[in-house]
Image (cartoon, rainbow, N blue to C red; front, side, top):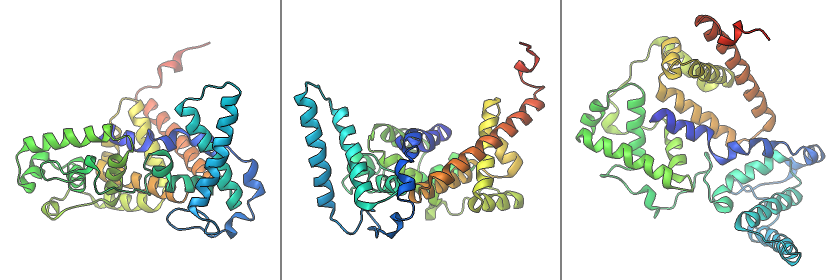
Amino acid sequence: MFKKLFGALTGDKQENQNYEAQTSNDNYENDYEDNYKEIEYDPETLHGTHYTVEDFDNEVEARAEAWIADERASGENLDEKDIQNIYFNYRRTVYTEWNNCDSDQMIRFEHANSLKYSGIQTSGFVKVDDNNPFLEPVHGVDLRTYTAMCLKISAGIDYLEVCKAMGFEPIVWEELNTIWPQRMGEDTSFTVTTLFGQYYAENVTIPQLENLKAEVSEEGAANLERMKTDRYFYEELAGARQAAYEYGIDGAQWILENFGINLADFQSVAMQWMTEQNQNWNSQDIIEFSNYQQEKQKEYAAKFAAEQGGNIADDVNF
C-alpha cells in the first residue's frame, strides 16, 4: 500500500510527466539570462509586481479567444482539451514576455498557480479549501492524523500498537486505510494526495503516538541526517533502491538492512527533496541529479547482477 501510494506521489504527477517538454525550451532562456532576475515577483503568486493578475488573465484570454475564433472560422472543430492547450500556451507566452524571464521561472510560476490554472495541486504550493469534502475526517481522524499513523506503521511499528495508542479497534484502521487512499484516487485536484505528501515530508506526529519510537541504529541515524542534507547521497540511495526492485529485491528492506533507514524516513526525505525542487525549480540541477541517480542505479544494478551470478543476457552471443 505505502510503496504504491508513494510511487504515485513521486512519479505519476503531471509535472513529472511533462518534465522533458517543460525544460526543453532553451530559445528564450539564453536571451533573458542576464535580465530576468531584475523583476520583482509576488512571493505567493510569482506574478511580476509591475502588473495585476487581472490584467494578466485578461491578456491571456484576449489572445487565446482570438486564436480560437480564427481556428473555428477556418473550420477547425476544437474540443475542450484543444482550448485548454491554447490557453496554456498563451499563458506561457504572456508570462515570459511580461516578466522577461527564463523557462525555470516560468515553471515556478506554473507550480505556484497550478490549482488555479490547471485544477491540479503541486507539492510545495498546496492550497486548501476548508469546505473540501475529500478532507472531511473519517471516524474522527483527519488527514494529518492518518498520515502520522502511516508514518509509524511504515517505520516498522506494528499497526496493532498504533491502534492501541490511538484508542480504537484495528477494524477502524482498516477502514481508514481504505477510505483515505480511495479519496486520493477520486480527488482529481490531487489535494488529498499532495497534502498527504506534505505532511509526510514534515514527518508529522500527534501526542498519542509520540511514545511509539521505531528502532534506529546510530549508523542509520547518521545516514538519515546525511540524506536530508546531501542531495547526491539521497540520489544514490534512490538509484540503489530502484535497482534492487528491478532485481527482485525488496528495495525498502535492502535500504533498511544496509543503511539503517526505514521506509517512512526514506519517503519523508524523498518528499522533502521533491517539494524543495518544485519551489526552487532549476532545470540544470534537476538534470544533473537525475543523471547522477541513473549512474548510481546502473552501478548498483551491476552489483546485484554479480551477486545473482550475472544477467541472463551475459551468456548470449550475437
